[in-house]
Image (cartoon, rainbow, N blue to C red):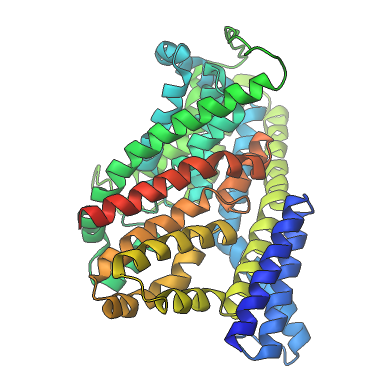
Length: 460
């Protein structure tokens, strides 16, 4: 029965990939494919997923799963993503983004001659922020609101700017990461201990390789894109001075949520404080602070309240374009799990008689691919994670040596997935195709994952 279920999973995955490649509506395709797999799991009695509150009818239970997925996403990450999308729209409407770009261009004037260097510097800076803001989609949208306009003004393409922003969220690291928490628990360490003794020694050298590969890859594709429109490369032109119509103090508003999150992060310990601030709260608080700036500038209550409309419209746009896709992707993931697709991959790999290091390397590549397929590093790692201690024991390997590369590979695969929340979110806000962004990231990420695996097992 498992062979039949695994075969059906592969067929559905192939059909889904074909339809996505043909640019059919992604949420519709993923949702339908997920429901088909959930139905097949029930018929085959494989590993059926049931709703938390069953309806008493198999047909209605399938719809209940979709309902519960919507509720869980909106109450968890959905509201946060919608709030950030609204804040990005609000910043653009009040022209605070223009003020930020103008000020940032002054100290970054040196990088006008080296825009791609400025782009890759975003990667380690973003990774440090990711430790205190462990939400890939959330941080990605924050960087789109603050860093993205600066990079565009320096002369890099939209895809290059978005590519390095996505790369800033490559590694689910730090004590606040859900994947870190699970990995540390499986290894028997605290989150902080696992972060310092295991993650950092592997992440730091891999980040250097990531920066080099993203630099070369983005530069190559930008030149290639330019040559599509002319037989000769288009010479780079000077960037026109940015026009701004608001006081420069407005420049602090796009980065205000980031500043608040860093100041009140429990891991920064800048000062003793009992305040615990999450991303959604920081965004809403920053919006109210921004309204104070607007009313002082316009001296009009009517105009000030009218600007809030852009916030609500931004939230609605994000819901229609992002939240629906995230929900559909999660239903698709549940379908894969219900047909024991992940379990079958593990079983087939362990029965090939390969050495422990080879199996671990294969597993890391499998989970990288699973994260690309599912669009979620958490879903991929949480599917594999609990199985790893027993597999490590069978292979005669330390548990951490198997878990560490797979945990990092899961979050790396997310950045190459066209259905991942981070990719969809930043691509939609910037007005580019998530598929094109995922394609731009795939090649340097494959090189990075190969280096990560080789370096990890070479230094064991």
